Length: 139
Ligand SMILES: [Zn+2]
Image (cartoon, rainbow, N blue to C red; front, side):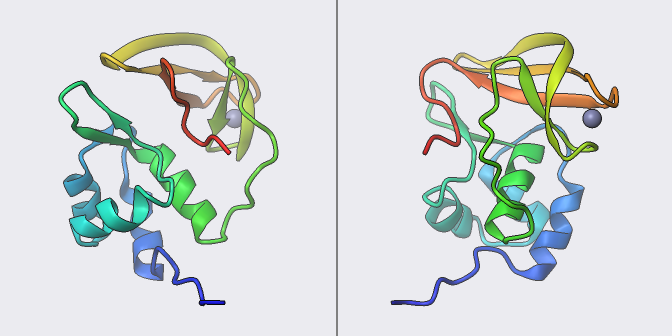
């Protein structure tokens, strides 16, 4: 058995904090967390980093979604058995899936929308990506 190389180093984990609630290009994510953009393409995306592809083939990565994925990869966050329901989102404050209050969806591109609302438990802003067809995080 080969030893699995960690996808993210400690300094990158720390830099994840600076990711904003916005869509990033792979090169922008790479800049923010201090990795080579090829690491994004060759390691993170094939390993299942959440991303969306627009109709021109451009890859977009949602900051908080990427951070959640990266923390899970780093073993800092247990993967939840719970699958998000259509009316649920991950609340960063509660650190668990919550119902979305006053959810409003706006399109980001042709295939992707961003559903924003408030956490039903604590009232913090929550987001989730919505997509027609393929769903992120499928097992
Ligand atoms: Zn909450």
